[in-house]
Amino acid sequence: MFGAIIGDIVGSIYEWNNIKTKDFPFFGSNCTFTDDSVMTCAVAHAFLKAGTESEDKFTKQLVDSMQLFGRAYPHRGYGPRFEDWLMSSQPRPYNSFGNGSAMRVSPAAYTGASLEEVIEHARWTALVSHDHPEGIKGAQCAAAVIFMALRGADNMEISELVTGRFGYDLSRSLDEIRPGHEFDVSCMGTLPTAVTAFLEAESFEDAVRNAISVGGDSDTLAAISGSMAQARFGIPDDIRKQAENLLDEPLLDLCREFEDRIISRRLWEQGM
Image 1: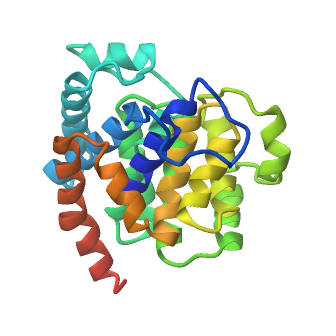
Image 2 (image 1 turned 180 degrees about the vertical axis):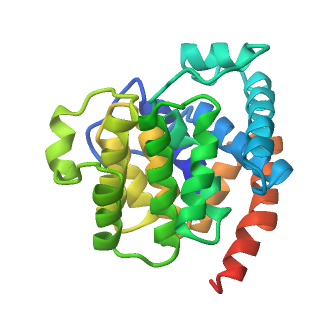
């Protein structure tokens, strides 16, 4: 999940100032964590508190966790409808197919022992707000790619999953996407680009640079690609340390707890 946070931080200064190149300072001046990181931490918090035994228990906890974290970290770039949801006394799903479901889903990739379990847990993370079929599918696709990458799947295997099971078109390269790519916050417009940025990458850093270089919703594209790239490449120590210095201590503590209690245990169980 920390890969998503790093992508978010690095991309934060380019969301409204797009840069159509991979040649930029990786941690630019004034970069910071945004709603992508806050909600990723909220999802992790819900898994820590509620576990995965019950959909109902988890989704109730997730609403509480998302509202808790969202209210503790206001003005972090939440969309208007989601901000209303965060402040509501009776939050309800609002049929969203926005990419918020995919940007926050990465913790779910570490909570299941099988691909089907992970896809189901990803559905839970989307249901509370992004319950449109495309919103759910975007979360499931992102989590599935992370799960597959963790287990050493190659680009062909991942591409077949993304196109065959989830129906996203991966036929265009980043060089073909980049010139005409504009701001798009839908799962339909975001997932193919984020996956392609990951598949074309040669390292964790390269995946984040790929995603940001496309333009558009840079922090979210980089958060999704970064979460996938962490699973394949890991995160270099120097990059992680720089990101940790830019993350609030409570969020950093939560990340470490999730890594210690969930990720390490799951990888150990899988012999990884």
